[in-house]
Length: 344
Image (cartoon, rainbow, N blue to C red; front, side):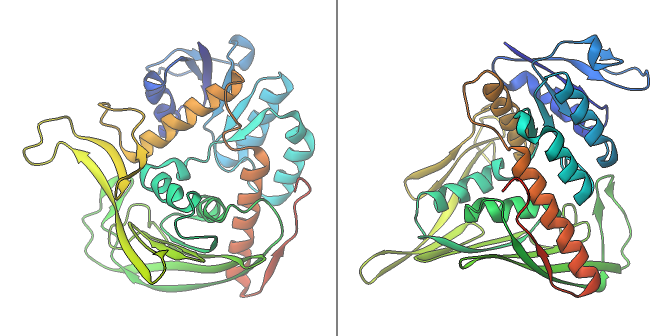
């Protein structure tokens, strides 16, 4: 049994400890909180008061480096919420101090979402050939960069960033807190950036404020390869001489209409290929919950020496360096070059 604690007590911390019960061979010990408070789980005042096999951080950006340092100095593996440090200087300092310790992983779960995992399987199985460009309009900053790099199979390295911002009216009916009840359009900022990784590899970043919750904007992903293209949940590819085929990615979702099984994601397929199968059946998890539970399971397996690193600090830090460059380029309308980081 592998044990862990969460540092923090917010909604993300609660999600980690709630989902831990679904992960085999994983035991949640409690939450480390700086200020005493009543929670639904055991609490500890310090990491010195508990002996977990690993730690999950779920704290504000500014607090993350100190918590990571506290774990690494005690020799405890840590899964750090994104980003691991708020700025470029902090990211480099964190790597120089603890990068080579091999203890620090980053809680980047977006490529573990069922739909993204299925799309990634299409690309990694070579069905559209060698991927050359990824376009993402769904999530922001380092998460979008992680998606782009993941589909390209691009290791950390130099990136040339060009970006711009525009503002236009948009109704914002939903936020994290629920329905706003506000029918009036308000100024919404859209950031569009191109990322040039060299060697014919590129990305397009397109994000409008609150796009995570605002259902008036579609989520889009395009992966362009040498032999075809993936667009959202459809694939077009060259299957043979003079043979171009279009195939949908289909999710089998139980619990609809007269399907009397539990409401659940079963699997995602492309024709007869099973691209993704839900590892937590009959739990009625959302896609985000499936992804986070999968991440916890991978972290536990890595700590036990039974699996690869879930998402090393070198990857997560690079994602945020590129995200910071997007914000800089969009604010100045200038081209920003992200040099190869010291860990590349």
